Structures are given as C-alpha cells and as structure tokens.
Image 1 (cartoon, helix red, strand yellow):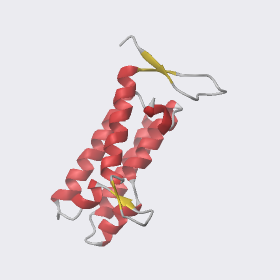
Image 2: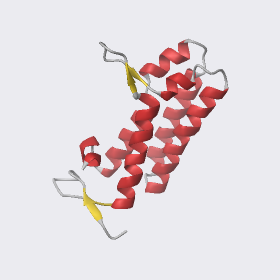
Image 3: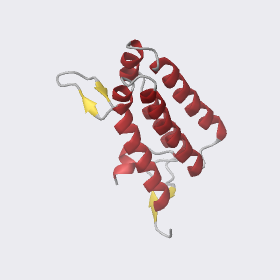
Length: 137
C-alpha cells in the first residue's frame, strides 16, 4: 500500500514510517493477544484472563487450541519481519505457556498470571519502536 503511518519513537526521536498493511497486522496481533490473555477482568481486582485460561479448562484440546492461536501470532510476527532471535523468544514463551498450562488445575491458574501472548506482542512492538498508543492512532 502507498499510505503509511508514522510511529512515535525510533532511535533518537526520529519517526519511523509504518505501512498501513503492517499496522493492520500489528493491530490484529494486539487483538488476538488481548482476546487470549486479558479479555475479561475480575471485578474489584486487577486480575484479568482470556480465552487461553478458559480453553485450558478443556482437557487436551483446549491447550492445543490456545497454542495454535499463539503460534499464529508468532507467524504474523515472522511475516512482519521480526528477527529470528525475537521469534525464538516468542516461541519459548508459547512453549512455556503450553507446557505449564497443560498441568491440570495449576496450569489454569498459571495461565491467569503468565500472559505469553501479551509478552510476545510487547516483543514485536519493541522491535518496531512502537507502543500501544501508536496502534490506536
């Protein structure tokens, strides 16, 4: 696409141009990360959880489905040009979440606190020198 958007920070105050199609992908990643990790908040607390925690309640299939969505996020990051070292960190987050989350009951509690998709989103945003407010513009 010919249109582009200016990111807020990159280097010493310089503005980085982000193509619209890349911005759309970044927003998609953010939406999936929110859905999977923080879509629901427990009233009166700072605790939030998402589909990852809920899917984890379904033995076997739930953790596999959650991991599949997480791997989709990693693949989107790869398609955006995120370097291999960061992709590896993202895969470690997904693997750790999948293994620890598969433990009955304790894994579901773990999923509430370890938000691998939000961590991975932050790795992608850091790579492009963006923050969450940049995606809202």
